[in-house]
Image 1 (cartoon, rainbow, N blue to C red):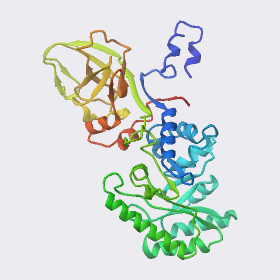
Image 2 (cartoon, helix red, strand yellow):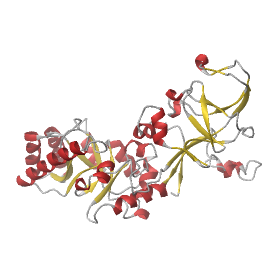
Image 3 (cartoon, rainbow, N blue to C red):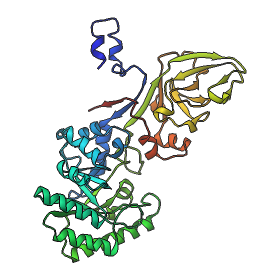
Length: 393
């Protein structure tokens, strides 16, 4: 940490700044207390018997997987989370190597198949989406002399991965007979839980039919799960034995009666101020021409950090508690904003790109709408080069 170098010298005051451990003033703040509170709200909406799998894939939706997992599934946060969900084996290994011990489901289709050995070594639960996958996992179990758990993915309408019909039956029969496999769970994924109730209930019906078929064939299933955030909140009958929230846990899915709090804020500081005269052009392509004298702030944030170029001459930032429009093309590392109404704004002034400042707020939903995107993509595309500061860790 750079902070140690400041001790006892004239820069010691700067060390108290939230950017003391990095130089470029562009950072993301993640409030782990907000995530914990959101998980408590979700807990209150499910039965005591229903388990909660917290989805932390894609770097915990851009929030930072390691710290988010530690802050919600660590020993000090017992009772909040029963399982964690990742997409590929390396994500699960990363959590194991920092001491996370909760059960971890790998929700993607494992390939190449030798990744099953790594999953077993780190006690990760793989998704089984094909008979070949089940055979490969059984072989790993035979070599290790252990019975390995897996979760069968049933395809009901999303169309990505999963087994259905006779293929699903063959997998169930194989896993039930194998001395090296345990059919721990069976699950599916909804396509339209937030938009189409009818389609969601049809998927749920297909899934429950598959579960009945599995039990009719002698399978013992500990966990049936289907509900993401939207389904868990809007379709109580889909909660089954476990829910798998992501967006709601990060405070990015408003829902009536649920005071979910956004956990992520994106901030920076002004690094340059100039007065642009009439006729001056700004940024690449001369995409903005000044029509009157104006004060322009340069902010060290660009599309290399995940701020979409689509927001050129379109986005807004918060400075001094008010909205300031983005001027000209967003570049790889910098953007410019109009601070003419803020004569006191200067170098070092805080800028909020996502989050609140004073009475104003730029939510992830609003930011996403400007970029013709969705909250999932917005937070997942925030670059790893932007430092994360974890509050209430």
